[in-house]
Image (cartoon, rainbow, N blue to C red):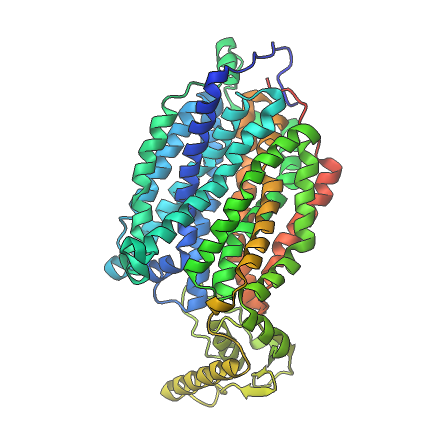
Length: 557
């Protein structure tokens, strides 16, 4: 199932082409990931520029959902470009995907804001994000397949791990450019960056597009595809062959549930969700959070190559499943330790002055309002939770009988919410505003900080924890491209591996930040969102242990 039987094995690839193949494939993919993840780094600014009129919690989650729009369409890009790649060729397809991605990103930097054109602004933003997602859906499978089909059999994991580096390298590149642009050293500074400077990283993608296209136009078609084309054995209907025959569908399902699902949630938790958690929950300023993450990424990135190399020696399955198992076991303690390291005042307040909401659960909404119509002022529970959501404070829910007016207990103090059935109009607005001020004041009295104190951040420990999280990413992600290439026959490889990969990483992974923060908004516990990656990673371990085959010694000719 992993190769086309009866063919003559290919010769070793020409050595002098190896650097060009890896460089052109990887660097182009780095630029695509840079384009794609740039939005993720600027979520708070995007929310302010394109999603005005919503409450802060909803605005942030909606901004994450716009971010996720690019992930949602990735599987469709995998189908379209995967089929083209199996019919027309690998090289041609990932030249087209680079062009679509680069132009879409450049145009985001040119978009008018909500203040200028109203609702047309977020609509145009979503359209461009979806074009980015379609392009990325075709990019990864093409680059991974292209490099693997050039690689010597005993170095396939090492060679394809260069493609695996590209996602993290693209994120690091985006981080570095955002840090440089928003730094006063460049003459832009934080205020100007939030006003107009955020466009600069997007506009730079035009330059990166030209570099990537120049390199990729110098490449030739992969030897495996060229051989199939010359012999007339390439697939004419890759979608039907890949997903219309149970033998191949079975492999797709095994790959998805036994490896990709866990890999996806570990990747997005260890890198993107960790960044959001630092900024949104632990209240570390954006520049400091970005700097700490980029240091951790720089330290951990070489391990993509290490685990790719190691998978050539000991196998792909062991490394991927070990990474998933460690994530399932350690994500909760790792992020709790991150709280202590990044915001010790918050950690102390959580331990010594826990916040409890006493309310009838039937009166409580999730604090997530996608259309911006809920003012959270019709029940006493919503008034309490909205006040806490604005302060981004962790709390515990305590059930109360029907008819109870909701209250919040902060340390030894109890504040009962206004009864919205007894106050109306301007009086209700004034009462809610006063209550919110009282809650904020009492939170400050018992030690809840408005933001993390930069002087108290244990930066070496924060970097060490972030390094560990990225190390888990390298374990699950480093060997997976080689495994996916080896699982599927060459005539439908591009299509077969792209769809499950992008369903996993586009849906399970890409939606993780939005789902995680929505879970926190609904529950009140800042750690509640980690149940999502923990459960998925654990399930992948169990399924993969029994059903996922080892592939590192298979032929892919």
